[in-house]
Amino acid sequence: MAGAIRRHNARSSGVRAEGSGATRLVVLVASIVGLGGYLYPFLLPLGEGVGGDAAAHADDAPLLFAAVTGFCLLAILTAIADDHGGVARSKTVALLGVLVALDAMLRLVPSVLGASPIFLLIILVGAVFGATFGFQMGALTVLLSAFITGGVGPWLPYQMLGAGWIGLTAGWLPRGGSPRRRLAVLAIFGALWGFLFGALLNLWFWPFAAPGAGAATDLYWAPGLSLAETVARYARFYLTTSLAFDLFRAIGNAALVLTLGGPALRVLERYRARFTWQPWVETAASGDAAMSERAAPPLPVQ
Image (cartoon, rainbow, N blue to C red; front, side, top):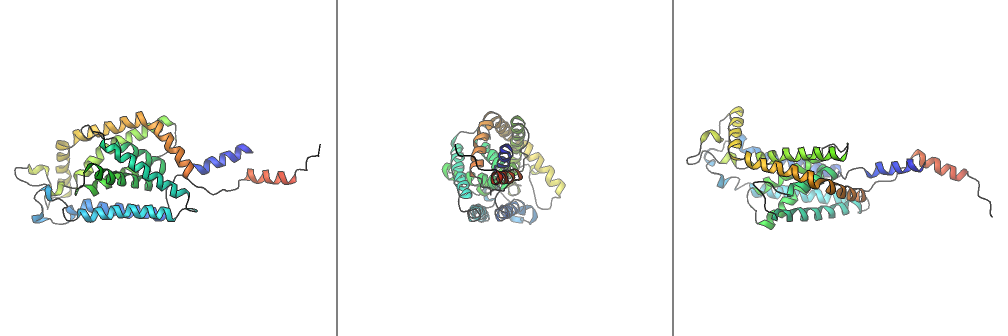
């Protein structure tokens, strides 16, 4: 009987801090807006606007930066407003602030040819706390670290989106299986995103970079290209300029997950279980226990 009640409590505390439907909607809108920011240069004729990556997104990057940052803050406010009694979710938001600050400081650790330790916590937090929490973790970590390191520029909103999508997709990973299997899945996930992050970030400037003075035109995009030609040119550009750096990032992500992921996951899971509020639902076992207590005769006085 007691074992049944304990199993019920374990199932209740195992629910992720996914956030409300409103919070998920805010993150969805932020992702759609960000995706539009990445893709619109390919959909609109740039004409004379194509002529160097120095001017890439010079006009629209501040707007996208304000939109992404605003959506992240709105998601936090929505999570606080939807909590039960203002306790559990508020603690989770406070934990988000601590994790973002800690991870942003890791940006000061020198990176090795593209490998950076900040992706480890983004991946683990998304895997433990869910997709919406992971998106905020990634986007806000890059935002804070940019101010710490002086890395503010038109590339910043695109870096925020890329890191946010790492945390978002980490929340979609399965949580079952043994701890070793889970670490292996997270390591493979981190390695894949090591390549995807670089490939994605190239797109913020690639449509604007050609054909510059002396640039090889078969590596760059130009208005009027078909989808197949665009993909072929970008593949050549990526293999020529980014693959080596992204390989180090992929290896670094996988190595950090395998070496530090186990202890970090246990700590994060403990905090998630503590901060995730769940209503008590009476089980059949607990109901039977209450009935047996009412039916039991009083003990004789000694």
